Amino acid sequence: MRIIFLGPPGAGKGTQAQFICQDRNIPQISTGDMLRNAIAEGTKLGLEAQKIMERGELVSDDVILGLVRDRLRQPDCENGCLFDGFPRTVAQADGLNDANIAVDVVFELQLSDELIVRRISGRRVHEESGRIYHIEFNPPKVDHLDDVTWQPLVQRHDDSEAVVRARVEVYREQTAPLVDYYKNSGVRYFEIDGDATVDEIRNNIRERLIAAEV
Ligand code: AMP
Image 1 (cartoon, protein in one colour):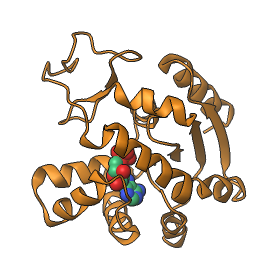
Image 2: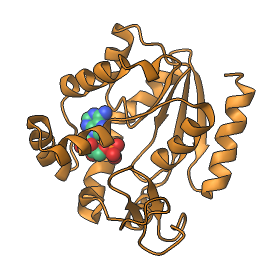
Image 3: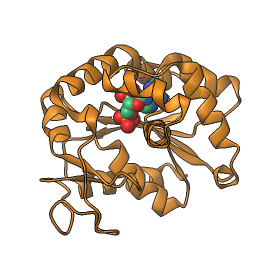
Image 4: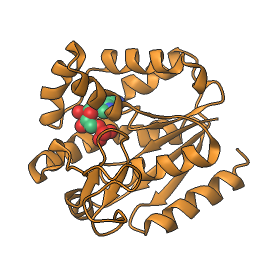
């Protein structure tokens, strides 16, 4: 089973992806996390990607498709995976098709532009694991600390308001065309209201997956 989570920044893709991957025992393929790891490791790719990410722009399709193809060769992807933040352009979606990587379900998490900024300003992450929190909507058990390791949480550099606005624009221009792309492709496509609680969204996605019999 391969699932795609589509949606603007702050819609809850990463948070919900973590739940589904745990439920279904499939890996979460977050190209954003992969790029952040490359930055943390100081690789050439990381150094190049960092500047692009700080501006809220997209890393090139070739680089992203290379990363994803390598990742899909790992044995843990045998039973499927959940793509979180990929594909982000029509060229990336075509790249999946060309490699005969079939997608079964697409979830589009929808959120208005006003809510996106509010959501993102409260977002905090545990850098090492990628666990995501929100100071208001999904707080950690102890303020500012990760629930599992008790290490401090941080705010992503590209979660500042100016960069978020750029990311939303990039989403509307380059990623939103994937809505029609997948709606017309015959895959099961579900629109999810991202303006609900974390638990409500989680249940909504679970129910739809069960109803879709995947
Ligand atoms: P995310 O964590 O998914 O919000 O991604 C953070 C940033 O990484 C994005 O703003 C882009 O600069 C870059 N990025 C992540 N995934 C992709 C992708 N599939 N294509 C191009 N750039 C990406």
